[in-house]
Amino acid sequence: MTGVLSLMKGCIVKSNRESGDGRGDIFIMPDRIKKTAVILELKAVKTADDMEEGCMEALRQIDEKGYAQELNQMGCKNILKYGISFYRKNCMIAVGEA
Image (cartoon, rainbow, N blue to C red; front, side):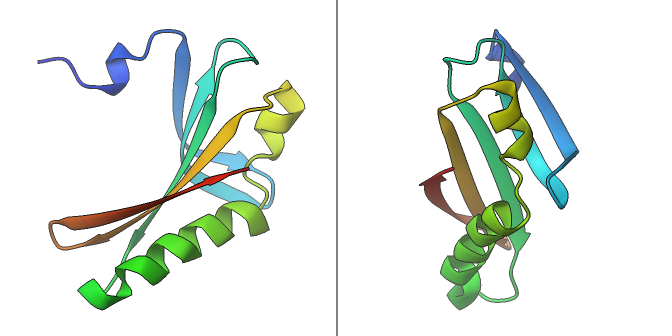
């Protein structure tokens, strides 16, 4: 069976990539600057009630640590950021634009 990320032709997927003042969890970098780039930051939380705050914390971390910096330097104008929190087998996703 083929994984979803392997079907993303024209994109480079990197993990724990150093960018700005830290290391983002997953970057999906387009082969053309006019395509959309994606930054994913993942957070494990201790309770189901913490899931929304985990998403917001992940989005803040993307901004505060400057994870979009490398993509901006490449000329990417369209950058989506995803804050994803996990509690056991559940997840919650928040989306923002960098």
